[in-house]
Length: 392
Image (cartoon, rainbow, N blue to C red):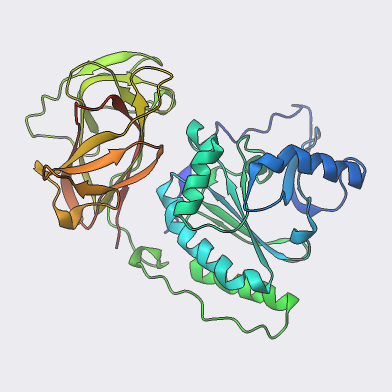
C-alpha cells in the first residue's frame, strides 16, 4: 500500500506563459547549460552553496520561460553514477518510515557507485530553517547529501506533489524507477543492483532487504486507521465541539462538553486557542488547554513545538500530559518521545519543532487520546499535525 502525503495544488504550480504550448518536461543531468558551462557552473554553485548539507552542491533545477524544466548536474561527483533522488520532509511520518530503507541502501551501495540525494521540501515554514533540518539529519543518521529545496524548485522540476517520492536514475541520467509514497522496497533495491552492475559487471550484492514490518509488504491490507489531521487556516480543520475558525489570528475559547462521548476522528479542544496559518496554539490565559480525539490506530505522533507567550523570547519546554482511555498512558504504551516523570505522570516534553512519538503498541481499535498542557510552563503549545499509524 502506497501511503503518502498529498501536498495538493498550492506548491505544484508552474507559473508559465499561458500561451506556451509545451507542457513542462523534466530532463535530468543535462550537459548543456543556459550560459557558458564555466560561468553557469560557478553561478550555480555559489547560488546553492548554503542549501547543501553533507556535500558540496551537486545539482540545480532550472525552469525555462517556454515551460521546459531541467535538473542540471553541477558536480563531477554525480556524473556517470547511479543516482537516487529522495523527496522528503523530516516531520512527515511516511517519510520517516521510508528513510530507514534509503539510509540502509546508501550504506550498502555508495561504495559501488550509488549517489543518494535527499531533497528536503518543507511541509511547514519551520522546515526551511537549516538548523532544524540538521538536527533531524543527525537524529535519522543521514550521511548522504541533502539539499534544502525551500522554494520547491527541484520539486517543481519533477511536477511533484507527494511525500515521500524516490526516483532512480541510470548512469546516463535516465529515470528507471519512480515510486510515489511508501512501499515497493524490494523491487527498488533490485533496480539499484541492476544499474550498479551496468557500471561494474559481476558486482557482488547482498540479499535485498526483506521488509521487517507487515505494513511494508505489497499485499498487506492495512485496517481502517484514523486519517492524518493538519491544523491551521490553510487546512480548514474541522473541530467537533465548535464552529471552525474564520481567520488567521482569531482567538476562540472552547469548552469540551462531550462528557466522555466523542465522535470518531475529530479533535475536541478545551481552553483558549489561536488560529495560525499552519497551526493552532494556546494563549497565555489560565484556561486549561486540552485536546482530545477518539481515534483508531496503534501509534500516535504529533508535529508540535513550544511557542513563547511573549514574541521574541527564547522558547522553553512545554510538558504535555498524555492520557489514553481516560487514564495516564502506561510504560508499555509510551512512545519514543514520552516518559513517566517524577510525579508518575506520562508526559512528552515539547520544545523544538519536530515529529513527537506519543503513544505506541496499542491494540488496533478505538481509543480516546487526551493531551493536557501543564499550566506551569512559561510557553504554550503549538500543534501542526497529528499522525496515526498501524504499526504492524
